[in-house]
Length: 133
Image 1 (tube, helix red, strand yellow):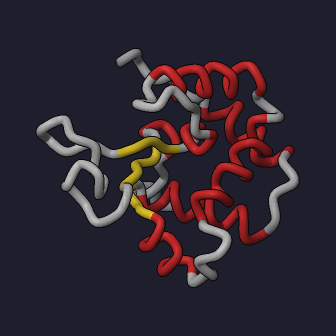
Image 2 (cartoon, rainbow, N blue to C red; image 1 turned 120 degrees about the vertical axis):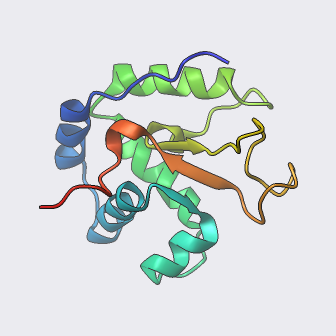
Image 3 (cartoon, rainbow, N blue to C red; image 1 turned 90 degrees about the vertical axis):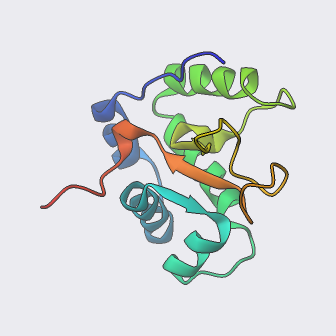
């Protein structure tokens, strides 16, 4: 596994402010950055949004919008995502978060028999759950 590209926080914040995100999309990003660890169901419940379209699909759309404003970094993340995918495909949501793993090195997912839902963790540099502003 290759090392994850670290997102420059200032560039990320600037990209968010330049992005044409709706209030609901902004809320999704803020929620993920606050929670730190989430899955499709928990995020839908916390945000009290409809389950269709899936919030993880919305997340990919949001990441593509943000990625337009940090294109070089976004391409590096997409390459990292593809190289670390068991199926050789990238997932645009990896700009903000990635699959979570347990202490035995197994992905937290139904396929691994480790969680009911695919579980994700926000990247450390983007986590805001411990800020007290």
